[in-house]
Amino acid sequence: MKTVTVLAAKRLGITCCEGDQSLQQVAQRLAEEDVSSLVVVDEAGYLAGIITRTDIVRAALAHPDAWRQQRCRQWMTAQVVTVAPDMVLEDVARLLQRNSIHRVVVVQAEGERLRPIAVVSDSDIVYHLARRSL
Image 1 (spheres, rainbow, N blue to C red):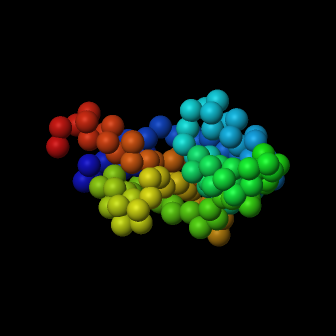
Image 2 (tube, helix red, strand yellow):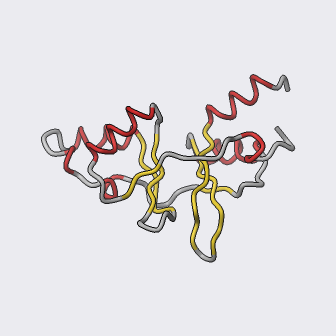
């Protein structure tokens, strides 16, 4: 884990949505893709935020009759913890623990903008640990 980079351990690809999508659409996508979060991108595909199953639950509890119509951007986290593709998994694990989070978005910098290319979760790290007896 000390030398394995994010790119070596993770397949590229993410499940995304846009901020103007309804929470109903987001919830359906989370269920269909069987993922715990969606990376929120702007119209050009750059990182705008992240929305999780927990965010959907919070919205449903706060607005039981109207959560479905709420917009993703209203409930997403805009301040996303990101990592570079060459970061090693051990550093990602420490970052997850230090920030008490379950996932980070792997990004490629394009000028001042960030293009999401993958998500690494605590589940990915546990999977990697189980496959490689450390």
